[in-house]
Length: 428
Image: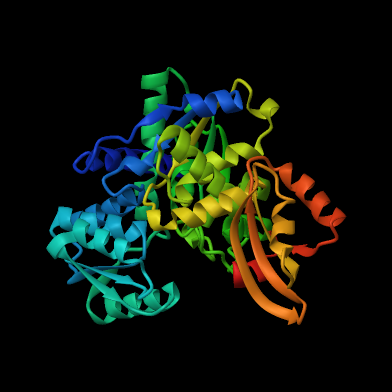
């Protein structure tokens, strides 16, 4: 009975948090996406957390933390956070809402756009301090400042009040499914992006405790699969290396509190999303649906690609779109990665003859759909030859089969370095 009361208490607390959030913004839409539904054979609904005032769900947890701290009589000179992204912006927005002073620690390497947005959201209530080249240095400085300056740290995910705030996403989904679509969330597949685990643990606990849990799938970047590793080893594991491309979800170790709520899931429920495939999804959603997504915001949608048509046919799927804070200066890199994933762009190193007419001979091998996007001499390996980096983009991936056959027949010496991360990372 005590356990049941505890569970009911969580559900009630999330309901209260959701009602209180209406001070800041209305429910984010739950939209049936016709394009994705036709593509997959399922009824696909997108929970548009990219449409909050700060374009991510992080505002929910920060608001709930402040709300409960203030209601509990907590007196602090400062609220403090360390973040270079969505948590900082949500934190700043809430500081202004509650008229509380906040100090945001960001790495020196944080893009100016993110610094400016955080300052706009917080106004005169937020001070920004740039410390260290890496997040760990920044986080340690924030902790030290909070202790020495009578401040309170507002963590991005590893705290019960943060988790409770993120769980309001599930509270809204369940009501919207019934009210707007005449469906039950417990009959659906719910796909959740995972970084530190605050959102995933809050949503799954709320639906479980309220008797509305169906099937869950989790989406992590392939280069930052901390939940997958933790579930496989039944304990939080700090990854030795993290790919930071999906910056909103590139977390080296799942939060302790979120893991305690997620540890009952099997590791096979976690889908590791390849970063280049994710870029193809971002471009697809931008070009076809006009939806701007940051890499972490596209994780749940991309995970649909892991399911066979038979597995999705006739089902209802809810994918949580966690954020849309995309810096368009990154668009060329995203497009590049997408083309490489789709097999429409490759990079080669050719042993190029140093003689008149060699370039013309090479160009004659290209087809009408093939375009050279990069041509760069790397070095002369001998008097008569030089190493040349050549990037080629085409319209159909099987064009490269034809091209390589022509290269081989003409006797060209070359190496395809498209998928060689070590070489490509140094020279492309």
